[in-house]
Length: 425
Ligand SMILES: O=C(O)C1=C[C@@H](OP(=O)(O)O)[C@@H](O)[C@H](O)C1
Ligand SMILES: C=C(OP(=O)(O)O)C(=O)O
Image (cartoon, rainbow, N blue to C red; front, top):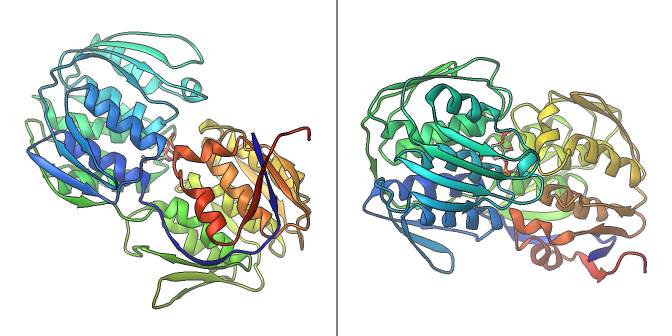
């Protein structure tokens, strides 16, 4: 299926959905703690469902209610022979691999879409060094892992995915030995390491951070049960912040401006482009009348780049978004896809190996674009439709369920005009 969106500006108030990154982390930490934790403000996106099911598969008791979870954790995994379906969630996969090896385990990881093509070599290197057996197929996620992780020294590149470092940070405190993670190349997506450290700290785990070059993790630690409310997601807020910067009248509620989320950078970037975040009694709103081009370093906030690029496509001058090669290893090649979409809608963008260059235009035309089955592309295209001259048709729009299942409902509530359609008609 597909949707056809008639250009119409958005107006109203939207409650930003809970952070997927924070929810993954809270569910994992609570699941590893002895005792009961309640996690509130849960949205059951496909990725979060995958992490819940993964922790249950290992033996944690998780009780699911409308918008909260009660979790009775464990570290003595009873069901250490199990299957974990990560669907398309890179976070679930890269967090669960080391966690599943805390006890002697025999786990089969499966998944969908592009997940089997996203890198895992960092873990394969560790398996080789530690004698952990593994078997996998190329390009599809079908991975068998058998063995037990030991603490020690881990040399991990900082520029492939921060999720490997987070995954190890969850597992290593439970080892019998102390560990050091040495980060061997400049750390990208650093904000996500901060989120992991912040969550670990809340659940009673200590990690010593030597300037993100060495992380020292004492062994023999215990997670302590803790109640937690998941804060709003800045990667999702970015869609509405950009919508505001493009002239829509959208107020965002529940934003925590003191958040550690790296995607909060959306605000700084848009302000550098001549937009302003205003605080109202009801929430926050981004406003602008005249966006200007800038230079953007995307290395710390990869998930917001597609929608930020949309703002650049409609700003005055030439923008360069740099250090974004890792966009190519997400749910689709987001660097290529973003450039293609901007051009198909009538803008001017150019793809470079590690960057994109966007020449601002006054308005976008519209037309058919693919979602590439990637939630962040589909949502960026929906926001683009609000400022196009003609309808925007997006295929496989249901892919938003990966991170934000209520996106289309919220979009329509704000005045978005869409109809389901079949392609070719
Ligand atoms: O740790 C996390 O919650 C995430 C880390 C980032 O991945 P990389 O570190 O691979 O860039 C980000 O893109 C992903 O959506 C969520
Ligand atoms: C890339 C993403 O998530 P993950 O890496 O967890 O699949 C995302 O949400 O954009």
